[in-house]
Length: 133
Image (cartoon, rainbow, N blue to C red; front, side, top):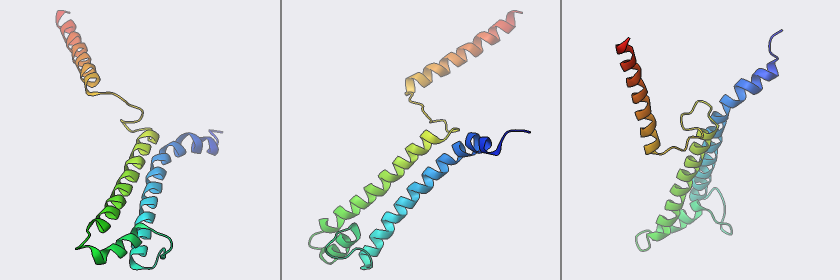
């Protein structure tokens, strides 16, 4: 009797868990990038023949006063990489979240204003119609 458990899981739980799983995955990727950068900066990560942002930052820290771009460029790359991953995750969350107001909505400001004007006009005509009765 009732609905089978697998149907409840597929219909109700999985769609609602999608946004949480996307955010968790994105935060895990960002955490991995930052951890690898920190370990390489401290000398515990990727070694000399290979390169990483942390290794470049550690090598450039000694020449920071004479050549600041050696530290600035990898730092900016790290910041842009983390922020872009967060924006990608935010976009995916908006796309997968069934209760999000932004899910699948591509409306500009003018169309929103037009909808608001139509709603107020409809409310005004309803109120005017009730006055005449």
